[in-house]
Length: 365
Image (cartoon, rainbow, N blue to C red):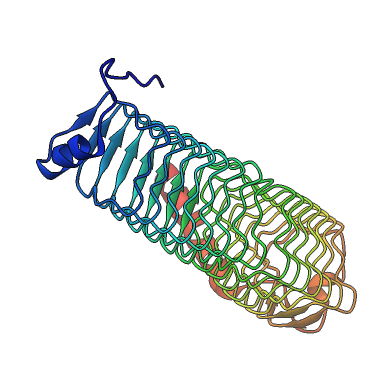
């Protein structure tokens, strides 16, 4: 982005204030290093203006439109920029501590190294922005939306991200220590090798996200959705995951020992060589799951449904079964379906299969 200056004498404060008062769009001027503390610039349109190093602490920028502007190194602590719109702006190393930025929007902006500590970012939007090394420590960012943003070493420590959307982002090196992450949407984002241990992720949406090698030990995953997500070699030991949904997810070699997954859904999951020892999987559904060499040792399987699942070489040592359905499940253990509490054939499924076969024969004849 190139800022075009006026080429004439510097714009005086009086002239600038007059333009602001009259609602004149401010274009192609340099306000580099200017002291604009506590100025009321609400609703003004700025295009191709250079604010580099300017001090806008406490300024009113509500509903302003900034297009192709440069704010590199500017100070905007405690400013008010509610519903402001920054389009194609450079905001590297800007300071926004305790700023009021509700419903503000950044479109295709460079915000690397910016500091938003304790700022109000509720319902704001970052779209296709560079947020690398940005600091959002303690920020109130409920319902914030970040889409297709870079976030290398971005710090969300202690931030409130309730109902936030972090979509199509590489978050492998982002920091979420002590952050509020309830109801967050992580759609298509990459959290591989992340350390999220002990965090409250309930009702999170991880659809098609990558969490390979992610540390989720002791997390709250109640009602979290991992549909089509990749969790290869992830550690889910000791998690609370009632009503969690892993349909079509990849849990190959995942470590889930001691996890609580009652009434959860594992339909079409790939869980080869995964460890579910000492888990509670009561009332969970594993239809068509591929769980070869998986371990279910000492696991509670009360009313668990493994119908049509591939359980070849899976281990069920001392597993607790009670009406555990194994209808047409593949297993090399000849005694598995004969165990106390196991149901080798589901009468309703068998009847449905017979009806389907009858209909097929009738159509072919």
